[in-house]
Image (cartoon, rainbow, N blue to C red; front, side, top):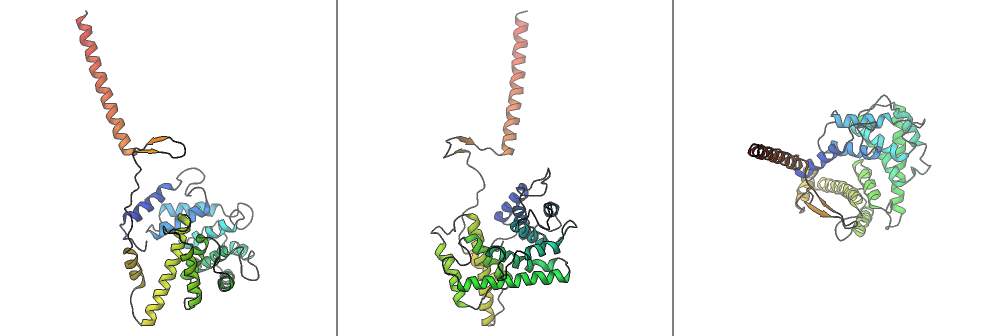
Length: 323
């Protein structure tokens, strides 16, 4: 989204793929993979690629998430902090709250999981609490609830800073790039990362540099995407601080976009090979697009009808000869 134009083939292909993957029937209508976190991430991605909040895909997705609230009898989603966090992120990201959802009780439930140090189960959950607070201005809620959410975020931020300062350089906040990337991203977009602390900045960047493979990735696609999110947010804040010190008015987003476009990307190809062989099973498959298959079937049907007509004519001629 930072690098590409609105009409980008990359963006359009990704967005269209997401839209096509949404379930449009059954009890899970509006979801992606019948999972709350998949659906929440899809909502965030679609918004970032230009799909409006009042569009049917996003409204249906939010309705599906909202209907799952408190099914267990408790004010949360599936009694899971993971699902509850992502459900709240999706709702706050879109700025739409269903009457089925009691935000105050859900936030109180999350707050009950936070210990005296500010840790909410694990470092990435703690960051999600900060992210929910960051998005909370998009919806209305009682002042008491908003105050509780701010307290959750403030204590959570203190805990994450303590972990970053005192922890060893091998783990940062966690041992995985997806968790560290998401934490770094959330701290930067919420304005909580110590952008003027050179020691902590170097410690953070060095962790990602050390754990990046020669191919440019961190473990798998999810880890790599999350690492890019965090590093991009950090770079944006560092450039903003740099331009501020220089006293310039340069647009940081424009500069980030310019630099990203200097990086070469491979040609995007979403087509499958006509003939593919599965390495594990040894099976060979032939891939034909649906539109091409329809043309082939129509052509075959036409040829069969024509052939039957010819055979009928021949039989008629032969019949007349032997009369």
